[in-house]
Image (cartoon, rainbow, N blue to C red; front, side, top):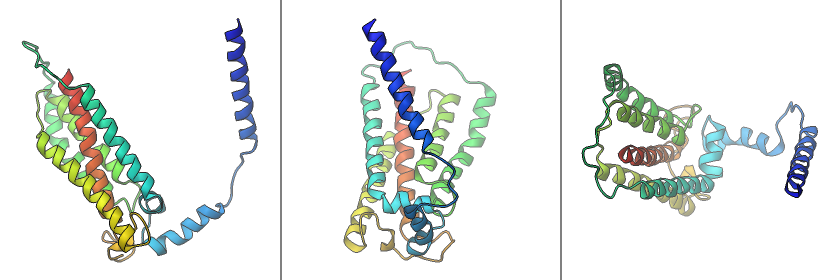
Length: 228
């Protein structure tokens, strides 16, 4: 009985807290001081059309570096927990349908190209390294669904992930030494605003993020697939 009373009090307190928060919210017709400053200054200062990219990759680039590190730790943990010590003997594997097998062969290069497009153009259009990396990992998922016995070069996967992380961190240090702070994109030429080769180091940073995220999620999928 006492436990139920405490639970009711906690729920009531949370409901009151959220009610007061909702009371203070309303429609905003103009940007706040910080958001307005970012929208007005980011295109000229950082040379990118996508203001969100400017914030994520440069202004709070250290946080993004931490997020990539967290993803790496999570992927490593999944691989460690699902590692196979002994290969199963006599385990029968299912066969995918012919439609799925044929479709995967046709869609695989399209999905990978689309993923690369997303993180290469992250400074111009919505998207970026994380989104592009997830799209690339989904291409491998399609392959595994079509052929559960498909294999991936683990050495190449590990090398790509390690080198991407290394160069990503190296650009961050270069920004600290040559620019105004960690991951400062102005260490490379700013190029022509609105073109692919613009925004300094941002396209390069997003490319490394995309490759790292894609390989890490691919490793997670392989760990899960090999455990089946």
